[in-house]
Image (cartoon, rainbow, N blue to C red; front, side, top):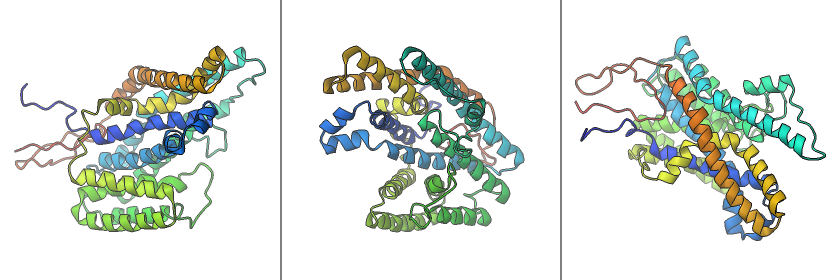
Amino acid sequence: MPGTKGKDDNRFYFIDALRASMILIVFEHALDGRHVTELAEFLPNFLSVPLFHTGHFAVSLFFIISGFVIAHNLSPLVIDLKVAGKFLLRRSLRLDPPYWAAIMLMCALAYVSYRTMPGKEPPAYSATALVAHLFYLQDLLGIPQIDIAYWTLCIEFQFYTLIILVFFVLGGKLIEGNLALRCAVILLTLFSLLWPLGILKNSVPGLIAPRLYEFLFGVVCYWAYKDPPVRRYFVLSGGALLLWAIYTANSFLVFDCVTSMLLFFMSVSQNLSAGKNWRPLQFLGKISYSMYLTHNPITGAMFRIGYLSTGRYLWSEVLWLIVTVAVVVLFAFGWWRFIEKPSTRLSQKIRLSKPAVLDQSGAPTSALPIDGPRLKKLSAG
């Protein structure tokens, strides 16, 4: 109908576009796997560094985005035991099926590699290792990763569990002035900064502690966006932290501060819906999770096949890098279409709250349903 907005008009399109940065992980891991060493050495630093050495920043970006989006999802809710359970179940249904399928893919390709390559060691995945992976416990239990990329998922689920526990224990809503909850978030954020500031350098292997601050940057960013009195404190403290990060040459902290500030200013200027027409970025953002899960086994297989076909030279590294990235993207699209998208739809069947009822002013009188990273749409009256 003319004048009717589509169901996705209130998506966080800007955040969706930021997720496209996951493609940088493919390039970095191609170098880490020693598939493009000659090319990386041949290229000048101003090309080699951004292409092959910035993927780890994409992980930090995803952690900050995760904190922002989860804060958005939880903001209209009072967390009781039932809602907390639904939240964790919803996250599991959203993330587990593509992840479990990726584990199966990795194991299958490892077995094929063993059967087809002379001298290759057989894959030794014990039942304990597989079960630990299914529940994101492998790092905490000291079990080697089946795929090196999986460590971030372990951290993600620790964050989900921690944040829902904090909201449950302290009750209320962060945005609506729950003093205990606000103090807890502030204290937890300050505590988490002990690691990036170098005050604490050790942690339990596999524990979220050294990366917790990135998730909390996203949470506090969303809090400042929705609560105007908090904004000045967010800008002042964020600016001071950025200056310290620059002074100490802490590149991760500089990136995290800049990213949080960018997300904040896009939020308060009501530009989170910008980027809908950035179609390549929207496409890559849409398939970013599937691409992250599957890029390592596909990258290894493609370069192996490629170099067996052409030999390995500088020109063939360029050729097979281009072909591999294209195949990784196409494979990720298929993974998203047939595995991730259905699991997302399944997770959305679990309602965290009842639909909102709007009063005469257009304000919601009850919690809105949470259907992913969307802006709250208020009636015009």
